[in-house]
Image (cartoon, rainbow over the protein chains, first blue to last red):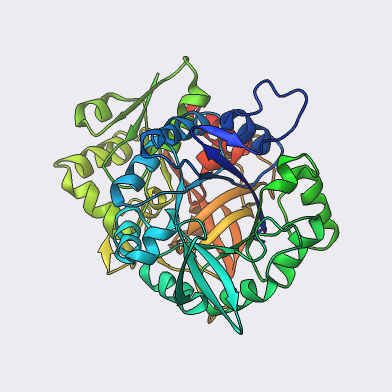
Length: 251
Length: 208
């Protein structure tokens, strides 16, 4: 039986982890490689890096981070943030990323998704959807949640599947950072609409939220950042909890 | 000893390279090349594969003499070869991804799309799934039945001869996830992404 995945996400800025794990025995709390290794040793099903480097001159730092991590972690590695072109994707994959997550560029030009999934295979193309509720609908936001595009998130999800996305990483902008739980309605609406796996993101504050994301949100995988970063829960605890609730996980 | 990972410019093989180098350390030489002479003289060959069946076959055919060299290596000289993901699928006679495409024909059978049962199962089959070991093999040495491996695929290999099957995995139905015929081995899952248990499969291949 296919297991539901738990994916810890690390925000990386200028090659350093922002909001890292506060483990006392950590030699360098800002080192993404070391943090990713802790997660993979702890049973993370995949690792996700979100590059939030703002300035262009420091953008190359992520390549070095990916290269080092892929030599130490032997679980899938997804990298997102600032990916604009086929060339960006090519560089990340060559450095050892297994998948890339495309956000703003996919909204601006869906051809990036069509071309990259043809060139590299759908298995490595994740489209990240940042959505915010507006009345009965959800709308797509780009540029890290700053720009409203007024595009309907559910329709967009379907379109991205048709363009060749292998997975969708859906983040609720209303919930992100609030720790009150995923936007279950958004997740289940998108998951029911498409035939590709959906990764739920945004709003996790406790382990029940992970359970809800899978059971009610129909997500194939759950992504979380802060509950793991601050050592509130370990990956192992999260998996054991999901297992106790009857959710199939890899233990 | 040296192990050659065939680099035929199809998909991303960095993870395969990293994992083999991790397992080999400095004891075994890992070459990454499309140089026919190097492939010929190597002890073992790894054939990775990402993207579609057609794109991988097309990429193999783009390099003049590569298919012939692989045929000599695996069929004529019977040296150990490991196919990973589409690398395994290409062992078949024919694949149906994109369009009907002739495979290498090493293990009689075909590659068809996983039945998603009218949308009940999402495709690709992505994530960790248990493998059901059907018979003993050197390549699955010390791997327990029901171990988890990482999968990413929408198509499955259906061999004519069920004796070729080493292991299956269940997604929509039981499908083949590891094969062996004499010196030819293949895994549908990605040992390079399956953590320590996957590295063990790689170790087993290196130590055949």
